[in-house]
Image (tube, rainbow, N blue to C red; front, side, top):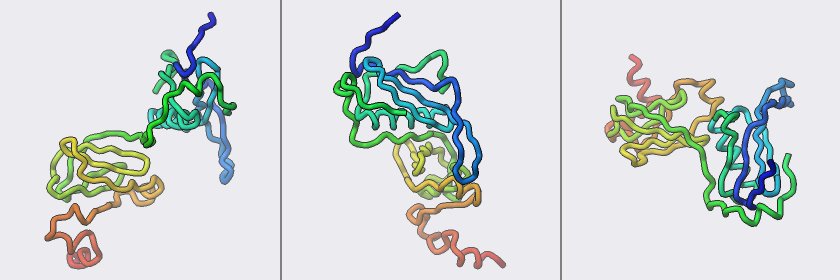
Length: 203
C-alpha cells in the first residue's frame, strides 16, 4: 500500500541485509562492513555509508554524519523494529526546506561506566590509568569515554577531563598511566612517577 509522508517528517533508517566488502589498500586484506541506509519519506532521498559494525557507537555516528550531510534533522527517525539490532544523491527540494536546523555544537557519542578510584588516585579506563583529584581516592565515580576524551564525574560534577590514549598506544603499552599534576597532593609533587622517584626507591 502506498504511503504519503509530509516533507521533513520522517527518515527511515536501517542496515542493509547484505554486507559489503572493502579492500585495505596497504595490506590487500578484504574486510566485511555493514551498510547503513537512510531514506527521507517524502522524496525518497537516500543516504548510505559503510560502517565497521552495527553497534550503538557506529549507529549514532552514522546518524550524526547523516544529518550533517542533509543540513538539518527530520522530525523522527524510523528504524526497522524487526531487523535492526542496535552513495548519495542530490538534495531534494521537498524534504530539505522542512528539516529542523542543526545545533551549533556537534553531538559526540560517549560510553558511560562506573569505577572505583584506586588508592593512588587513578582509575583504569580502556587499559590505561588516568588520574583524578587525590581527594577522590577509594570513591566511586562515573566515567564518560568518548573518541578523543576521558571525563570523570563525582556526584554529577566533572572532576577531570583529559585526552584519551589512542587504540594503538594501549596495544603497545597496556597498563600505562597518565597523571595530571593538579590531581596530586602537594607532598607528592616532587615524585610524580618521575625518574628521580624511581631511582630513589630502587635500592
